[in-house]
Image 1 (cartoon, rainbow, N blue to C red):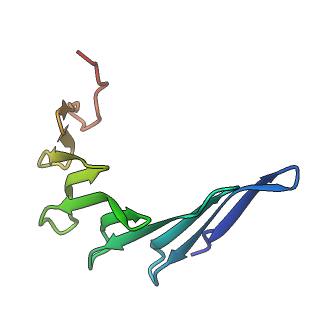
Image 2 (cartoon, helix red, strand yellow):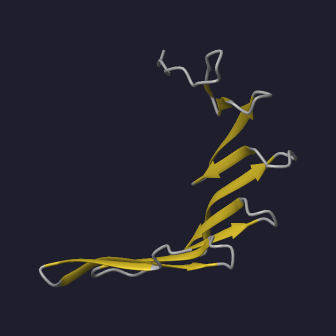
Length: 119
C-alpha cells in the first residue's frame, strides 16, 4: 500500500523516538511498537472483525480500547470504551451522530454538523 512501516527521530545524532508497524494482507495495522530513548518499548496490538472493523487495542498486553458495532451492513460504531471509560453512540436514520455518551449533536437540514455550544 506504500505506507511507511518504520520511522526514527533523532537530534544531534541521538535517537529520540522510533516506531514500526506490522500490517495484515489488507494493509491494516496489526501491531505497532514505539520506542523512546532511555526507555522501554511499548507494543500496541490491533484486533479486527471479519469485515475489517476495529474491535480492540491493547498496549503491552492490557486492553485499552474496545469497540462494538450495530448489525447494519457497514457496521456503525455503537459503543466505545477507552481506558475504562465507556460511552454509547447513537445515530439518525441518515447516519448522523446524535449522541456520544452524554453529549448531543445537532445537524442542519443538509446534514451538516451544527456548532457545539457548551452549556
